Length: 471
Image (spheres, rainbow, N blue to C red):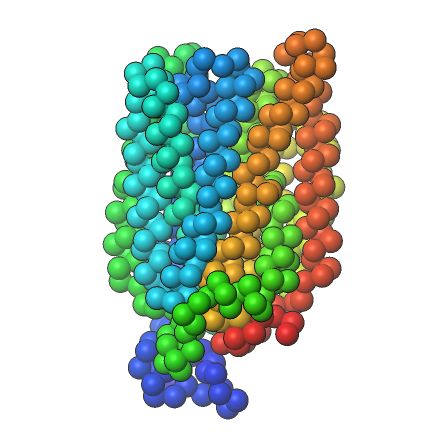
């Protein structure tokens, strides 16, 4: 490879680490243009996923209760709203299995096109839904159906982005390049928060306005750009090598369950703190400070926008640090940070001061939680062997999304309702729920800290190896 080709050549399967003619013909040479295009397409897909994610988090906390569940008490309306939020997570493992299997059988590019299309269409359609006042019980039914479709697509989107960028990236810089698509998370979250802030800040009764629909309808623009770029994307070099050497498995899930149950368990454990913390801070905490503590509804969107700015700096730095010091050390450090600040942050949220709330939530989410995001980019794909990498990452990510992320706002809402009920129904007593909620977050985070001591270091491992890390 001459210097003027400006390309990166990945290792081959054979002991001499050479690329044979067959493998080369399948696209195993990644130019800097290919690397740049992959970073953009993965980032845009992540932006769409987390734009939808943040939209739904904000809408669940601030809007969906009165619009789709008006015949329940305020506390139960919130739980019902977060119930639809949870269903999107509950179906994600099915999406991970379905699209993850296709990704290991048909290629990464095909699945990334399918998932971004499914997510975007579902999110856009939410903006067209009739409310309960118009359609009665059909309104929440349709909301749930579209949330399920959203979850199916999201079940493999982020896994595919992480796998593709890790397999594209040059050895020694995988942590940095695999973290770049996660900047799409910051972009999507910021867009959702900013749109809601400017559209709804002067509206006193959201049930009397149709402006809440605009952010969901805007998903169509991100879909168009993401699909256009992905159509021009090369297939992953590692998958191209599997095809060239006729090593693509027809049964990725069977292969995964037979050889990688422990690795899947480690992946789930690693994400308890990150995914649980993300949902707790982005959905539950916003609902708590607005609906319980009594801050203005703009507090939630301000917190998210501020956290995004911090997270946009933290994510690539975390990736760079994993390339230098190793994946496990950096991931563990961010998890311990989240553990140490869990109680102080939730105590600050209970005080009801706007400035301190924005600062505390921004640091907790932008540094602690999203630091783990950045460190996780290359780590999760490196844990799994080449033949079942896509489905391995997808299953580990999305099972954890159910047990840590999706259910967290429901548990938190139930805790708030329980605290209120033990004080004779006094809504103001819900402020005291900060302590058990902080304990819940700390428990999830402790599980991740312990898992980091059980997980093998994966930095610079051979991505063409069909075995999992540590085997």
